[in-house]
Image (cartoon, rainbow, N blue to C red; front, side, top):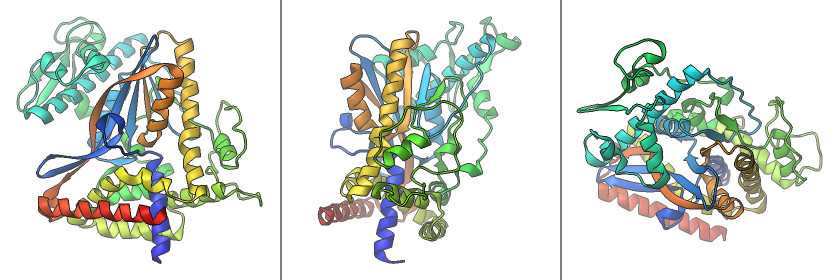
Length: 440
């Protein structure tokens, strides 16, 4: 494998992760992903949840950023944040998920269960900061401000209007007494306990439909692939993305046609229309990208084998996670410096798809006044453009940012001291900067 083909392949991997991924900035109030060191023995890749509020009227909008491979606990926390919103708009080219609404009785229990899960996530956040679990609502709420504080406060009350009971000690639990507000009972009167909800949560089955390089990388690093970790099958979750037909038109440099409703033919990846002789360079770049990510190319298979070999060592896994985290923070600049076809492909995969999100948000604001909160669940790389457009076109402003740990690395597992690892990361940053200068 030549160094040129290896470099090209790694650029494609970055591009695939960056459709999810991040733009790096100097200030925390402007960025969607960062690497931090909570203590001397820990390095974390963190992803932002950004809260936007209307200048006049409309629902609260939260940009819930994602990376496509991460610790399983990261997806559990995101699921809890997402599910308490009235509507979730999510990415997925060509996806059409339909779920029947729950009955009113079931809806009350379901809403309470979702609130308890969010209370559990908020309690864990307090524990991470304080070293102990919060014993009161006030101790949980102190970490939050504005509409996010209001969302947590609302979750501390069950769907029937009764305060959630908190149990803190060496562990944490939260309890709703059900519709009757009394211990015991059956059906809607039955108690709902957070620990029982977590214990009864079955692992999501892995679907062969989503096999590819990103899952291979997740498996090698003992992480989880996003589509294995997030449950999209809820009535209030809506696909907000372009169809395969629209993506193919954008890649060909044609006007994007209106979105057609109904099932699509998923047998062809975007950019994989090989029947035309006049295919654009952007379409060819898309073929290379999707081929690499799907694992179909020989180079992808070779890289997948190498990843499995490296992942056999806990020390190698930890080092790869460090490299992955630091590279993702700089990945936007790396991709911007690539030749025009890949740059145009990134525009299609981010800016053009964001247009559909703006369209859907505009429709919710105009036609669904009862909607109080909307979560936009997309790869964090979409959010620099998307937040600007939500603020300028829809009349919103940034209110607050919450950071969620996505990948946590124990420095001891790298086999380096903290000082050695700091030097290694500084060398990595200098190498990336040198490569960018060469590309320029």
